[in-house]
Length: 326
Image (cartoon, rainbow, N blue to C red; front, side, top):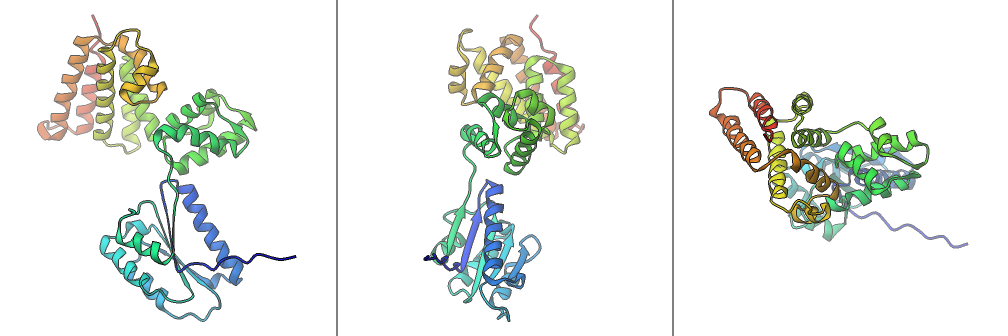
């Protein structure tokens, strides 16, 4: 029976993208390929670009080895190198060492940068990017289906709202959820029971508390965000975006359907449903007061106040959530 031989490894690979699990698995496949072809881990050399300069990696690539077969030099976090460091690698790729495969792994490499173009000429770029946010719900459902877990659109959105859009965390939480459910369809309550909220979920909880006029919950969410290392500035702008969206919704006819609101604001329909409910908690006057409170807080957080930015925001949230319709 005829057998098909695998093609030879190319002198260089650039493995990158925001879908970090796929990036990680592609790098692992490359490692396994070299181990299977050579039968020795002596053909594998690993570097971390956060600790090693490009000159060191290229010196290793150009150094003759005593092992037989293709050598793999795998560089993790290669996107951490400066433009100058990447230029060193691009120069090497103009005349790469025979019998050596240089694999660069990282998150972000522009298609137009010199190093990427050099890899395209010499080897292959493997880019694995997550879909845009609007398509992330569908991506999460496919990942779950691969583990025998069914997520409808609402449950998948609950998962995304809880965990955030970090691919590694999503993959881990989907695996945990699949084990917990044991196959079949998951419910929102299952997500709440086992999935660990990420910072993004805590930000959503904060903006929901503000929109619902729940001062106690809003302040609790702020404390949790601060405890997890979130900066006051990012929490501030999340609240500001939410209030601006509420301002827009308040100007629409009362019976505007959530689907239309979602299209106007370019938000997910679930977010639009929340905004449609929350606008009843604010009128034009209280929204104006809330926006003025945030404007004053922004000035204070940028140095006008002697207080820490976290405390300035905390006082602002307490005041704006207290701005209720009379």
